[in-house]
Image (tube, rainbow, N blue to C red; front, side):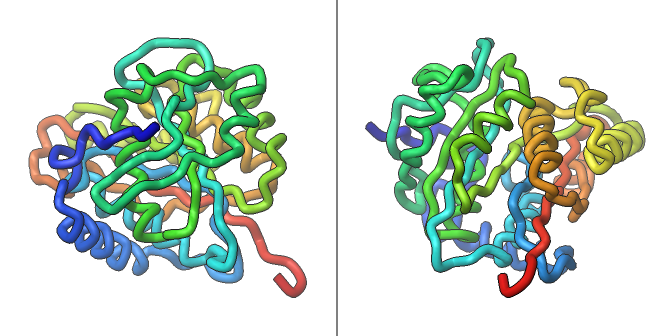
Length: 269
């Protein structure tokens, strides 16, 4: 069963060549903002708005995936908020493939293991209209190429418990992507102040200070922070901009940040 794209041609180009070109450009420009060396990116917080608004910010996050070992297949857990359906727990799709204009991506076998836990369940409805997972997949197809996904739309769920279940999968090549925008529709200067306070909480591992008014994906962010705490990953702010910077209108903006979480390499790694 395949989950077909629902925001191609709306949030990002529907034509494959244009889409690949745009994503490659965002990542290439984002490389200028990545300074970490001798470490492996294990998690990202990246935005999920239309690419003309948030693509330049997301690009700096996905530029970090150059640090990953390309000789292995990575499992990417994409953690997204639910914009359309309220529920408890973490929703996996019924589908076993996600399609974008760049091709099909398989849902990881580990998703079935997760579905046998206490928090995750299968739901076509939760994924049917949700863009926050979908918009991350083309970036992964360009930046990583060899991977499978665990697509999770998160409802009301305990982030610490979800982090434990993800770690319990025992995946040595796990990458986690928290899909989240920041503040919504405030005037430019107010949004900048609000978003920098939110980013400060993230960098200080203060996920409990975050709510829906700070980031639509505050539960995905809390989950990444719990994973980072348990695994020793260190955060780095790569880029912050809002739609007033990328699209021009500053009267009511949406904030975007790219934050990477790094695992130090040891010995001969």
